[in-house]
Length: 544
Picture: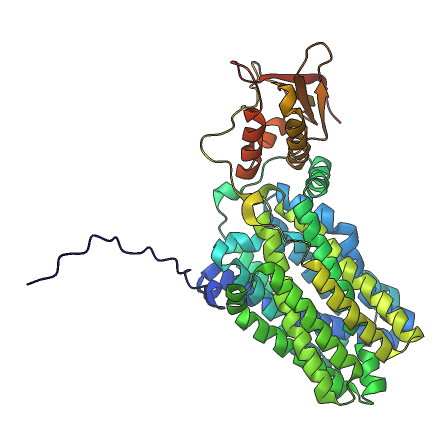
């Protein structure tokens, strides 16, 4: 006798698909070529920094001039990051990257030639270092925004981590190679090697065939800059991301400020120990990149960043209080793990939450916040080390970092919802269409939407409209308001304005699924047989 077949349906599996391996993005030929180019360029950058710093000690050995070399590399980030982000969003990102990297290569070639000819003075060195920094600052937003085009969404965390591993690996061995080149050939050779190191990266981007759908729309430069600022200003989740980054790296910047003094004074050691500690950080960063998929599978991004802050604090404490090089190396090893995992987690959260049209601009502002926290924190902890001493300063940084990590848990990172496209059905209240054509430069454009709202629903309507205003500004509106009609009870009018007629189709195309759902909720509060009444107005002259 056989058993009757079971009529119970099999249970649906809820197991999550395995996370991509740490090296999964390298299976993609374009990403692999870009990654190799990034590694080569990173080595060249560290040779450049080593050669420039050493050469300045010969040309002008004053501490202020030596410190000015690093300032010349970082200052362009604050001056050019936002303009660079706007350009990367409105012109071909691939060509923009090639041009920015080429600027760095040409500047390094000229500096090498001047140096070998004995024509480089301290101000010449600073000028060309600044020019290389300008090229780097111009490429950074485009570089960050490009990674999501080279890999799938699932592989993006690993791709960001791999780039971080390449950078930190170059950091670990680049200064040592630079020291050998300096001792055997001279500073000019460091600059020449740096110039050559950009060629693989230029070649990788030159062979990249972008998706035609990624071609940017034609925006004016200044309008694009203002749109990027408005987007971030009207997006609280992205602002929270910038705050999390600033909280973490203001305290985590302490080792950068005090590491040379820790080696010299607390450990009573020399350059060899300094190199050992930098190498320990590099090893920690590489290991962090390798275990990144496992960490993301076990913890939410908010907890990854918070745990990273706590681990960084432990590493800072060991570095500041330890009297043995191995204890300090252990602290830098932990610090390196945090450096890659936290930066990668924040960077991925930023990229996945941003629509493609504003990605480079918003990332440029994130980078300003990131580097601002590093630079500001370095100044703070450098001053504290001089006034309080090394151990108290590092202890204060560790304690502050731990508190900031726990406080940061209440500042949630953004999700990917903001970047999702508008679904097929469209909007419950479509934006009005023009009956005639007009020049793209005419403006401003004013849109009004008239709602009939029952008195008992007014409070809910106005509460939702506050978020609608943020959505309109995110998508390009420079003005927004909701007004009550004082001649008709229960009538409310939403009004928003765009700079130019050419911005109107862009505004409609930028509406995301999350925003459309919000607009649908507002439309659901409208009362009456007819849908909300819409009107479209255009100024008579071209906007300047």
